Length: 355
Image (cartoon, rainbow, N blue to C red):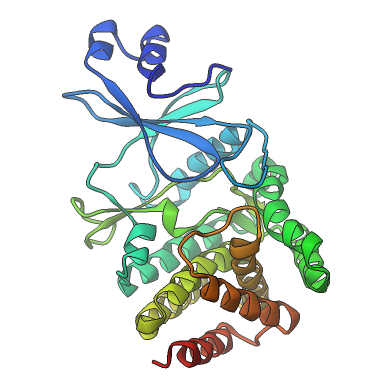
């Protein structure tokens, strides 16, 4: 495999005929910041539309050694194709081309002026409208793919999801904390036993882009764009819920003195998801089971983000200890509902910051 970077990407595009020599001479490439598992570069061609090239890497950029198969790039491509069929136009980027030998594909780029929702949250911007829209989008993805036999056949292999989520998050923590092994083992077993719909596996604020220059799907600004789908698979929707909410609550802890604003994000997301889901094909009775499993994933993911292989870098040591205390309690004695969990979090944060 030819490993590409900003120093040789334009030459590669010229040599493979994807850019003419004349166009290549006035083009440039830059590495985009973001995740830990791939190299993502933006190609700028003056007078034409920019595009993004994404190439897989075997070793992920984390402090603890972490490896995954290069072929995961093709899973992302498959999920992108699936999402383009079940989501409104513009919610995910369009695919442009692929190179199987070099484990890469290209997709359209959104304007440079876009924002990353994670950055907005860390900066203290808590817009409940965005959270509600995301709840609607995720529920639509889950509900419209329930029982899809074609997707189950194509995306049923969860090896990559295991390599990038269950193993570095749940097993890594369980190996180091015997007390948490039983609930984490049960959670892993339940996740493997549940194959319901298309699951993104990385529905995270860092993968949600905001484009203020464009109107969204329902006339709102900003337009929302979802990216990064290599952990996508046909599985348990509870993981997406817990994973997303874990990120929101970690930001809530960071901004503890603005507790109500950030908790509104979690409430708004969950309410919108639930209402939209009820309109879809997923039966209502399992929704209670879905909430129970989602809360377990929420606790396990939060715990993993302070003690797993990929940890957050924006919490103080005191905040990290609070996350450890809360998540251990939630894993060993799961709250009865999301409302109960958020009420517990509110009480603990109010005691800590005296606000």
